[in-house]
Length: 72
Image 1 (cartoon, rainbow, N blue to C red):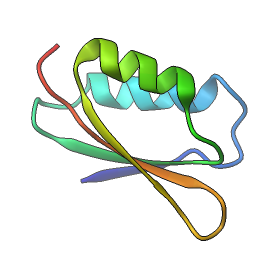
Image 2: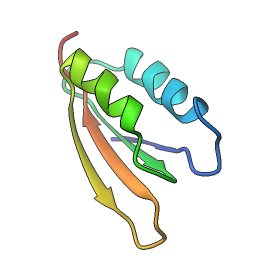
Image 3: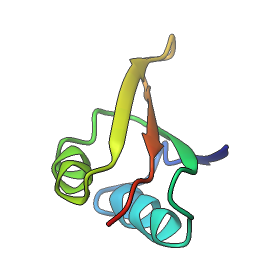
């Protein structure tokens, strides 16, 4: 599983980095991202593309979002 740490980046950089990485991945692969806040606009994009995602709050106040790429 790949992991991207997006903490400290200003929008839309975290979303752009995440989508670029997902575009290069194969169906069935999983990506974990760590963001300072819940990525509400990213959730919409992931739902549109049919990707599974799960959000887990972390102790430092950030969020880890685990995304499984499924067919576009």
